[in-house]
Length: 65
Image (cartoon, rainbow, N blue to C red; front, side, top):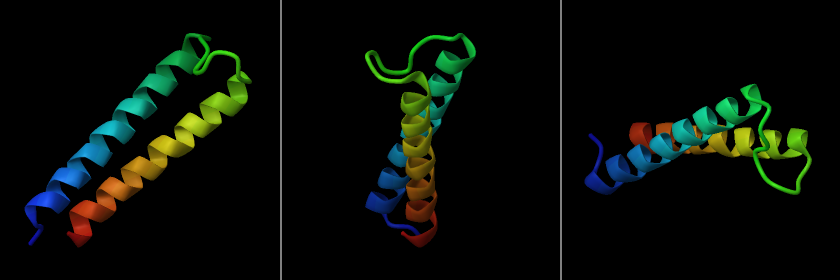
C-alpha cells in the first residue's frame, strides 16, 4: 500500500507530465513556439522528453510507494 508522500509525489509528477505534454502538443499543432529563441524542433523535443520522464516518475512513485 502506498504511503501518503508517495501518493502526493506521484500525483504531482503525473499531473505535471500530462499538462506539459498537452501544452506542448497544442503549441506544436498551432505552429506556435514552445520556447522563444530556441529551435522549434529542439524545444518541442526537450519538452516532450521532460513530460514523458515526469509521467514515468509519477507512475513509478504510485506503484513503488
